[in-house]
Image (tube, rainbow, N blue to C red):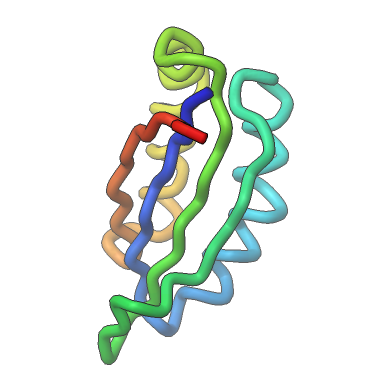
Length: 101
């Protein structure tokens, strides 16, 4: 099992709308594909900056092949949609992790 994590840095002014968009649009659309499962949104407290909030969105994924399929079919398009909506007010950094225990 792998964890696909994206850490987002969001301007404070846009943080609430970003989390609403994740919950109402982004996550439901991804769940339809069935490739990524069990989403979790976390508010990151350790990297607080004056004008931004940080969030982590984590998904469980079977393997890197499933993640690649999702990215080709859906992920790239959803990232473009996020850029159209939030422009430079949201920056995301993906990380792929393996569950050991």
